[in-house]
Image (tube, rainbow, N blue to C red):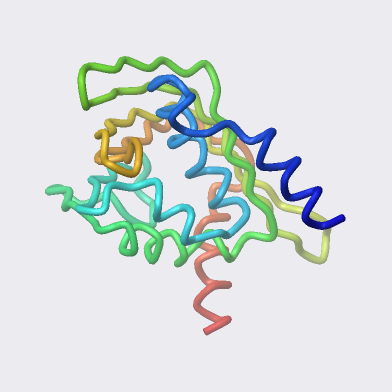
Length: 177
């Protein structure tokens, strides 16, 4: 029975080669938030170019990474390590991207997408939330393993809820070590 289910799943799963470049690019950028919400760090790292990527969170001064004046290229494991300083401190997160625009030019793709990222911490009074609303800009390169992110910019437009939640989540991560 298990083998039958596995075969059925594989038959229903699109093969990357059968997807358009645009769909592959969208999968890559959406996978970052999805796998971060699942805390599947290996799959998060796999969405970034093996030679590294530049993260730009300068619109949001309290980000875990990407706020330096000269933004360095970070290896995928460095990106994940930076995000692990805060994201595991939340009880739940949900990163939702939509209204995505993709431009493919040879082996380079650029995207813009809206982001609505909800972060939840449970406390004695119930739940406390912080919502990041803005847009993401990505640049991706085609590799032998598919499209991989080389640049990612988050543009904060507004915040809802408790703007101190990221600091509280980071403190939780530190206290768990």
